[in-house]
Image 1 (cartoon, one colour):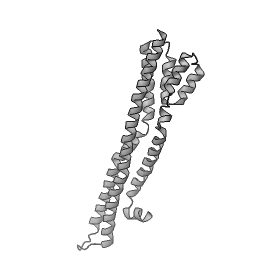
Image 2 (image 1 turned 60 degrees about the vertical axis):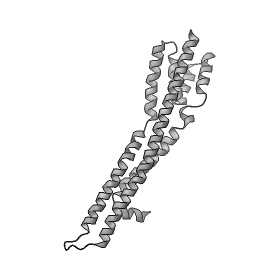
Image 3 (image 1 turned 45 degrees about the vertical axis):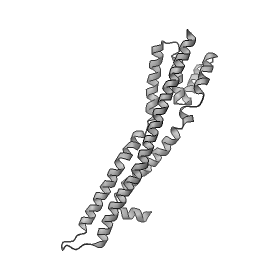
Image 4 (image 1 turned 120 degrees about the vertical axis):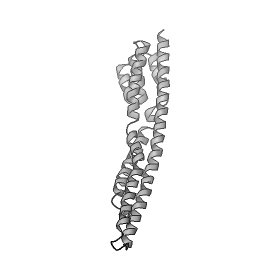
Length: 202
């Protein structure tokens, strides 16, 4: 491994740093965006059951708020249960925007790595090309070792830039789609909460 890094030259260190950051972000988002952590099954049904039984206390709301992003949205709706329908929906939408921001955390960084890694590889390729042209001496002769080193720098950096960019882009798109799906489901469940609670108060 060290021999490859040595053959790729100093530009490869930028890509190695980017790959470490990308891997950390992929693992962190993979753990944070698990469904049971974002949208526990049957949470809405449990909330509606507690509301019908009159067991929604400040302690229950505080626990629900800490339960999950969906719980945070539902807790906001329950706190506005005595307000008008519009006020209730507005409070839920405001919390929903904050939840969306939290779910999208670090995704922009992962997307940035996906888009800049090929450019880092291109930078390494350029450095390698400079080494290749520098291999030509004043008399027109070529230094074989420097020529080979320039070629290896160019090729390794190009390849490694793609190796970093492709998985980063795949996971970025995957996590974006997952977050978008969660937000749609949360909106539907929040609307169901509003309709159910308002219907019960009539």
